[in-house]
Length: 391
Image (cartoon, rainbow, N blue to C red; front, side):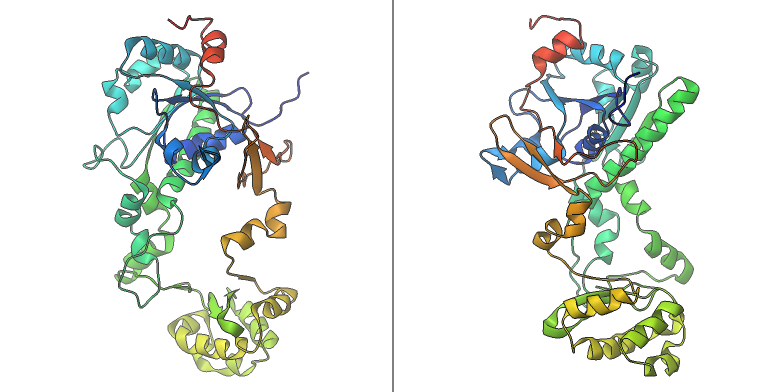
């Protein structure tokens, strides 16, 4: 009996995506063992190949998001290349595309046609605004949907009038993650029904989906939430507070019991008898007064000293790390969250690992490198398509 090496081993994915949202989805599938065949434009390939930073002339951006995939160049305006694509579709399990809505239809591959080609094929369409609705034909990038989806209006310091982008591309990445969850659900559904389904994921939808507390506050209180900096809108103390040398420590005392422990650890029993801080609702209503009191005490010691005290008492807390500190954190390393891949010329790329760990499968510290543009053409034509000639 053969031993499986990964949970998605045996699944073949046709990847028609580029840049980030779709490639992130297929990267996760590759990490989970799927075979991902990346279809790229002739000559220049995926736009991300030309995004910095570069290491020995290769894009580290592209290398990170496209690790473990294969590459073949196809011109989707050429009938011969479309024939190759169609033959790939007949043998694939999943097709992922992130064109503007309707593009695949115009190429002659609407959902009904895809079903006739391969009734078990799952098609995941990741686009800016989804396949329906008044905005569906618009193009979109991360910055656009961060702005339209409301998260930008919630990000930044409370006294700033300038909207602020979240520091990572959550518009793309959340679409990739929601898209992955949709594909995995569709694979399970296919086991029951025997047929594939179409998965429609819009980047704007995904931004609305992660608004959680902001949307509930709006409907419950009829107030438009705004940026609040380093604190939580409805749990207190739950914030980044200033310690010695203007360093910040994160405190997350999420209930009355933890607040009591915090006051004891800080040797501030007076805060427990202050009626302004009697309950979480009281503390939230008077958050500034409470944070002024806490910072007065926290200012006596460095963050590292406070973390040792707070964590020994079981109080959720942590530092605000920069990226250098994150990638060198011993827990991050122990969880294999920084992995590497090496090009055929020996160039090494370090990148974030896969946060999903499986008990039955290894999580290797190295990954297969991202492919060179069109590097797998001959192998794909011979193996997948039965030896079709280059002509």
